[in-house]
Image (cartoon, rainbow, N blue to C red; front, side, top):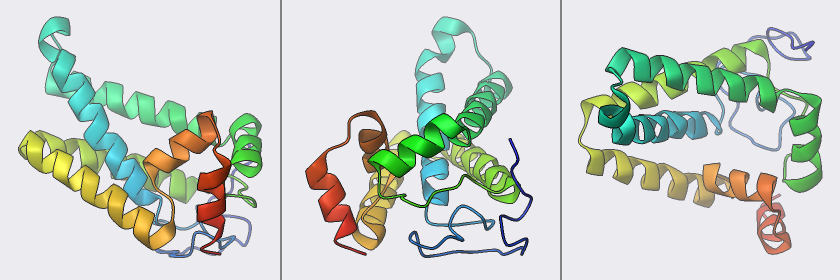
Length: 165
């Protein structure tokens, strides 16, 4: 789909902390990396809650989670979702992820999945709540708001989010 390894400027980088920057989603990590960590926690819980019924081992659940995250990365970087982000969310200049950032997103989901596997469910839930709260406070965006704005945009949310810029 024409994605570049390091983004349009061709420069590798480890962290971009500004969601309003054109470098966001181009570096290895950015504030949205926490959303992908949250994907791992959520995928683990969803697959764990159905594991006995479907006879799914941990490795199979992990492969399903990786496949789901990879599918999302492909969809997220398609013109359909890029245009939707620009139209409905605060990501007005979003141009898709660099390959480096997409690979990092897969890694972050994997870390979330493994973390959820190793810790107690209430700790996973607490971590998810803490990450969502911290991102909402620090960036006026998080996984929950992102999903709401992609599916059914709310003008009041977008207004609040834009107030931070």
